[in-house]
Image 1 (cartoon, rainbow over the protein chains, first blue to last red):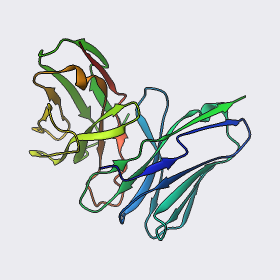
Image 2 (image 1 turned 30 degrees about the vertical axis):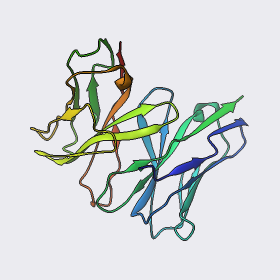
Image 3 (image 1 turned 90 degrees about the horizontal axis):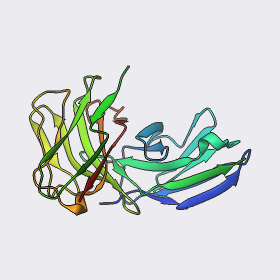
Image 4 (image 1 turned 45 degrees about the horizontal axis):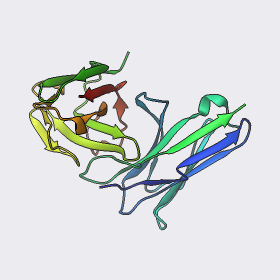
Length: 110
Length: 115
């Protein structure tokens, strides 16, 4: 039961550029979360945005949520080579498990 | 250090040989879950547990068993592994569902190959 779908599937940028990835989902949510996964390793939580919030910042990360369009975006500003990873959105619906999308693979070259 | 610990990290086994992947967390989390990750399919939930002695199926439970006898441990059991269970497995835990802070902490992963 895939809920979140990230777009694009893959993204390649140069260091210093901004990276934007999007997530669309299908049903009402309590919150939406973004996670990062370095190659073959466990996922690490980045940021959580609740359904009544529209925008949230954490360092170089900016997340927006549009519940009317059932979509979210993750912006990473001034990307670094260390940002190279896969990024997953995960949606939290009441009474169900956190459901992950298939991820966006970001490659940042120097 | 707050963490989720999985063992083994890497395992090669043969079809039909029962195996257990252990998962332990030290954060007193009520919620624990197992996921498998396969190329092109993303993360899929196998089983989850809301608390001790409470477990439920996720999206892909076939061929797996779990138990939750203690709060900190949530082992994943493959009674008769088959090659289609070759995958990267993750255990994760979080505070109670509905607590408003159900952020998952993941283990480092267990890469399983079934020959």
